[in-house]
Length: 419
Picture 1 (cartoon, rainbow, N blue to C red):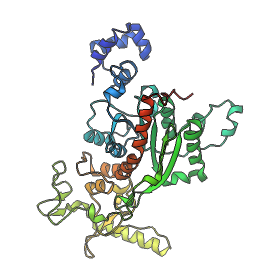
Picture 2 (cartoon, rainbow, N blue to C red; picture 1 turned 90 degrees about the vertical axis):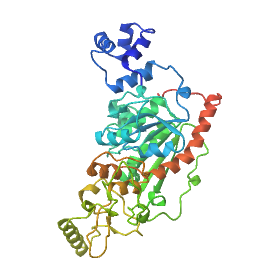
Picture 3 (cartoon, rainbow, N blue to C red; picture 1 turned 180 degrees about the vertical axis):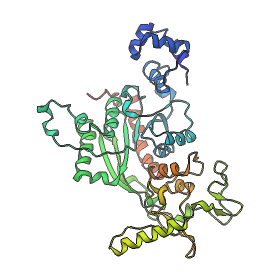
Picture 4 (tube, rainbow, N blue to C red; picture 1 turned 60 degrees about the vertical axis):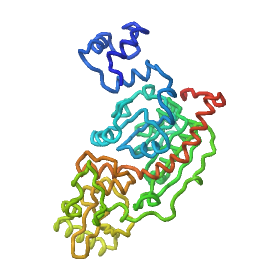
């Protein structure tokens, strides 16, 4: 990455000091301080300056392959899936500092800085890209009164119907940058939230307001990992393509938990970045701290019995190597109750280790876990089943490549920002 002094030195050959300050929206005094090194701009500001004012090379020369941006990136599960299909990330946004730490550990960023709060990012400062990726958190919102927006003088279009939600930030970046495609991921319940109104507004925004050809499908992660995890995938293309969900190759029989559990037969790999943190390689056993305490195990059994007596289905999920687990949640760190690994009838069960959680989400063993167990459980519980993303990327990317070729040949005109 260029330092700010060299960037400003290059720009001073094109702009006066006052012109530069006006373009960047800062005072000439601040600019002088940056120039002499008296103060430093935020790292994000440096990326923004490069994006707006330093097109030293065309994007195609600088980045080979499909350019992707990773919004609400978490620990990078969607990015990993698209990198497997030849994608190269040019922009990342993730606000959680612990997730940022894991992300940076696994994606050493040389070309761009991790941006925090996406709501504070000017869409024009986002680099040009081919595919926008976003595992956006869909907060509840209401569409009451939208039909009266003209009479009340409120903003038109998607800015009105999704104001106050983080989906709005995805929409405004799509509107400004007009990527060739996008992929959005969310919980299955997005379809039914607010009696379907939430999803109708999202589709209206993407299809009617922004003009994208939109496809959605619920995919269960258990095709690829031993976990029942249904998520909705929404993909869209700027132009009509031959994209079809029928091209997905979903294994009819998924793996069982034995495929992700630590192996006690001497074949468990020694990972230098894990050491013996999760697994005691000398004793060939999972570290004892993951076994439930007598007090917690007694509580969970009593809790389950109470709800069984009341006719409810609440309780813990006890699994064996032949099982397919329940959905791993971000609250797993609290008691592990949704996935407890049996260690025999006379032994207390144990939680999955963070490494096993990584495997349950389809992350390779090369993926590093630099945070505490609590944070790791939260991160994997909030993440995506990476092989699902990889499979969706596999069927999306050829259509994106076709659109790139058409644009380069002049068959499809480069897009204008959405008005």
